[in-house]
Structures are given as structure tokens and as C-alpha cells.
Image (cartoon, rainbow, N blue to C red):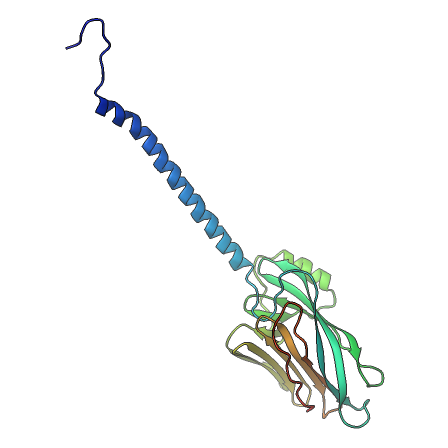
Length: 247
């Protein structure tokens, strides 16, 4: 019964509950929205990392050139006597980062050669995805990069252009007279191409380092060379490799 002249009072329990519930609901919704935001951010980061996954055998943290000294030997008709020492500075440069990989150039400078004329070694351009190292063999690299930038996933590579794989073993016949074999063993990926005439190319990649050996030969020792990384690339603690004897 209300007392004349006094305002009716709501029970303290009812008043407290009525005031608390709306605030509690807002709090729970705020926490849920925050949780969804965190989950969405983590998912986007995972997607970005997956899209920019680096190749285990050919990658770089930036576009800065990475140089290492390679030593070995060379042989051939232009070299008198037995195989002679050969040296070169090998520079690996990331040219462009793509959603599905990166384009690299491996160039050979400061070549110390005793052949006449002195040996020149052409640069290699590669597209490195998370699963393959693919040779870009066209004449216009800039045009190739423009086309790659228009893609959302890596193009399907011709077997003869694959110079590295991330795992397993692959063997490709290339025409009737030559074949290529790629093998991953431990921290090494080995590419070997050979022709029935005696021509051969060998490339060895080391996980987390890059190219550590290049060997090429033509015919029955008409011309050829082998180069092996002798110093660790900048920022790498990997030990130097032993130079194999001339074949």
C-alpha cells in the first residue's frame, strides 16, 4: 500500500537486476565481436603467409643482392693440359615478389678463368614457388614479369623448365635423347640433365641457402666447368663445400 506523499520504491533486487542485464548483454556482445575480430585477423595472416610461402631452396628476405664466392675448375679444347682452376662471384637477387612466389636472378661476376678467351657464364632467371624452381628462359624478362603479376596462382611449368622441387623425386624425358632427374635428399635438391652426346648440366640447391653447385659440360670433355660455393652467403652460417674433381 502506497503512503500518501511518498514515491513508490521498487525492490532493490529488481532494480539492480534490471539495470545490470542490459550492460551485461552489451559486454558479452563486445567480447564476442572482439573474439571474432582476433580470429579473422589470424585467418588473414595465415592466408597471407600461405600466399607468400617461400621456396625452401631459393628465397630471400629482401631485394638486396646476396653474394657468395664459388670455386672449381674448368676444362676443354680452349684450355691447354689438364683442368684449370676457376672462380666466380655468384650473386642471387630477388627481382620481384609475387602472391605465389618470387622471381630471382642468379648472375656470375668477377670470373677468374684461364681459358682463351676467358669463360663467360650467363645469368639464370627463375620463378620460385613453394614447390618448384622454374627457369624463365624467354628473351624478355620484364615482359614475363608483367605477365606473372597479372596471375593469382603460378603458371603450369613445362617439365624441361623445372630446375628444383621441394620434395620427392621427378624424372622427365626431354625429347628422345635427353632427360632430367630431380631428387630431394635431406637438405639438398639435385637437378641433373644429360644428353646421349655427353652434354650435361647439374645444379645443387641447399635448403635455406640457395645454389651451392653448378656444373656444365659439352660433349666428350670438349668444354665444361664445375663451380661449388666456397664461402657462406651473406647472413648464412652454412659451411663451405668441397670442390669435386673434374669429370
